[in-house]
Length: 450
Image (cartoon, rainbow, N blue to C red; front, side):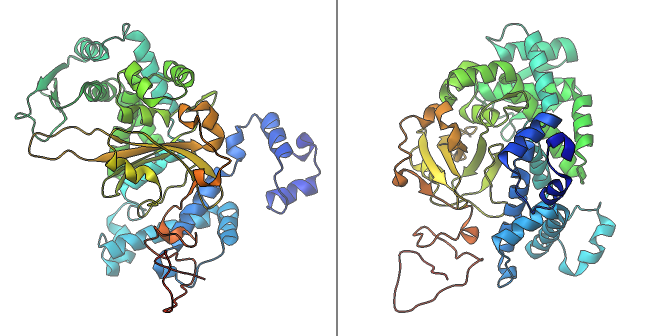
């Protein structure tokens, strides 16, 4: 390898042991010599792992024991298996204190469960699977784009999908009134071979749910193969992953990779225009934008977050390298929370994380399935974002004055992990710094620390 790269074996040994930097020139030489994706050499995985360890260490149980950021990064880079083992242990601890496991029975719990089941909730395991693939599943995209090409006319995709299900699988699609399906959006009756959709579903959701059934009926072996390949640890996780892959297929069928990427680039990622062009909802388009990570045909690497008006995060996809908090909410200075005060309006906000990385974020509310009166609809907001270096490719980056420091909002991942001083929005002190308590003064921030 040293000969291939044109460096000495001793220097290569130092690089492998993290005692010499991996220079830009050496990175390019590695990529050219071994046909590597530059992202594989970016250290993003190490950075993400270090962020997860740092977040876990912010728990009060580690007060006074928190290592320096450089030490955490060294462990993540040099001993990733050890870091993962620590995170698994911490997740088991969390389950115990939440009451999911009897604390006195942790030692014998594995006798009743598959190994590792207590380490992560199934939904977390599935999220990690998609995260590890940068939210891009090549096999599902290929299958969806192939079917899209065979459907012929795309002016009425729902009609095409209904005909496909009827002709190829003997399934008829019916829309039922709300009194017949008061609590269900989609239901498949295997005996009558009928797919029922709620009349409350808007058209993009009807297309999506029909496409999900196409995935389940027409691509079952592929779904099973991908789930088996994922090597998930629990049956619940495997079932959730299968549904997640079917949902992925549905989005890819509504917005096939090639045509959608071409349109996204031409329209500079204008979400509303893309929604109109492909007959999709705002949220469906935002989600699809976060999946455009084909190695040979990449779009802007977007991350996506969805939360409700109580701050509960229900979606997070980080193709753009953004580090979400695994435990807890988001920073109150991030204006995704303000979207609920201005429904339907787009909020553009450049934000800076503590590591100095600046992101362009686009936040707005999205529609949920409207329930019948007097039930209140679920209130949801999304934030789509990318590193500021991609802003010129995105219509939402036009007119930003990034030379003005006040145009960029400093935020943190969560209060317990953020060491920004004098933050008036702080809800908790950072667990990585000692409190400075002074009864003689009251600052804007609720907490001072050393």
